[in-house]
Image 1 (cartoon, rainbow, N blue to C red):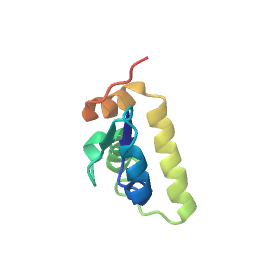
Image 2: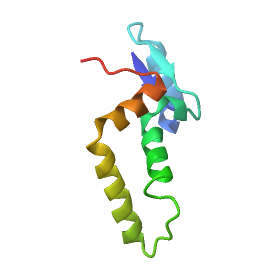
Image 3: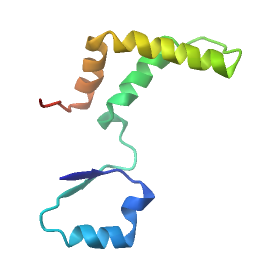
Image 4: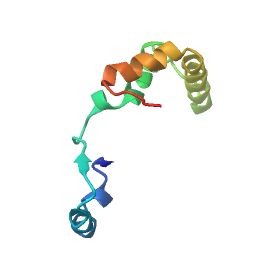
Length: 94
């Protein structure tokens, strides 16, 4: 099974032809914009509503430092990451 996004390479005629000739291969195409299937969107939402809200960044480095601080905070709170994954309806199988 292969899940493809809408990267231009995935739409190339030669690649599509090759994939169609593989009877063992099942391809699923993601919709053009599917934030509800991407747990990273939940992480960005946490950052935007928390560490990045109501801040006037003085330099690009200030922005980077703030994003890193927020990501570090999220990293050590697994329930936040689990919540972002749960929102997608996806699961991780061991």
